[in-house]
Image 1 (cartoon, helix red, strand yellow):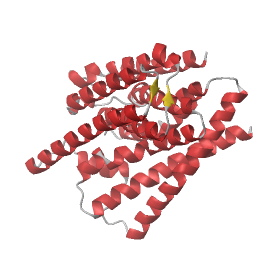
Image 2 (spheres, rainbow, N blue to C red; image 1 turned 60 degrees about the vertical axis):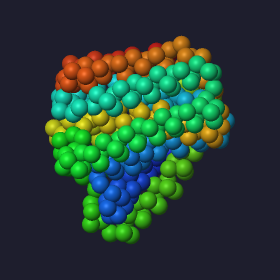
Image 3 (cartoon, one colour; image 1 turned 120 degrees about the horizontal axis):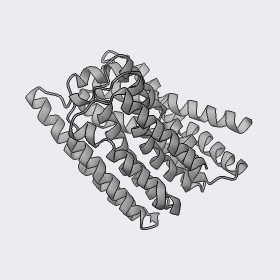
Image 4 (cartoon, rainbow, N blue to C red; image 1 turned 90 degrees about the vertical axis):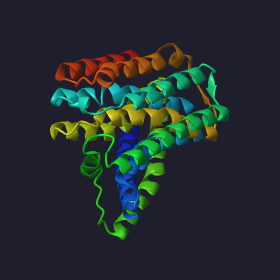
Length: 321
């Protein structure tokens, strides 16, 4: 019982620390004059992925790289099927209002690159540098496009700045001491929560005689996807879910390129054969399910929401079996 309470405490600390880091980073960036659009494309993406990154590093340090790999693959699958599926059941997601086709192609390219490197059997520091080089290209393109839109007086999506203010708690007048407190809580809480969650997850895996990768694909992956799910649910209830699809695409790209890229510089990440035979292809298949919503600008209706959520439940049942 204690190990479950420890895992829950670690997850809560991670979520709260991640939120504090995002709030602090966003408001610091806005106070020093960085455009809100640039913040949303870079700092917010990094901040919301910080729990996954800290978990990956902590797992490698603790000799449990299966949790690191499972967390990334499981989070990407959960982002598509659960994070978009559940909110769509509550309210239609008007994803047709954003043009995310180029970013979607980048995400699929990152997926292909990631799977290709996975078939080498282990992610080494060389693999990490390749992934980080791809990330640098994506961020450079995002920065270039953002500056072009700024000069033209446009945004990537309608009301993107307003969405950032609504969803990320941006406040240009936030006192400096509160910004420092947010940053401090995030930077201290993230590694502490990651250590608690990883240590307890390894113990749970041993208790039930399951592989660490399974814990990473389920318990840890779902837990670290909760911030994205909560944000998308609230946006759906407020009928402001236009940017949900773009957020999921950006998060998935960052997970594949940044988290594994950085973590593999800390230590090698071996790829379990189960990933090559099943989980990586489920992740790729889930990404392909986004094609009609991205390329043909279809809304994600309640029926689609039910289907996506049912597919995720079925996937979890298969993994646990």
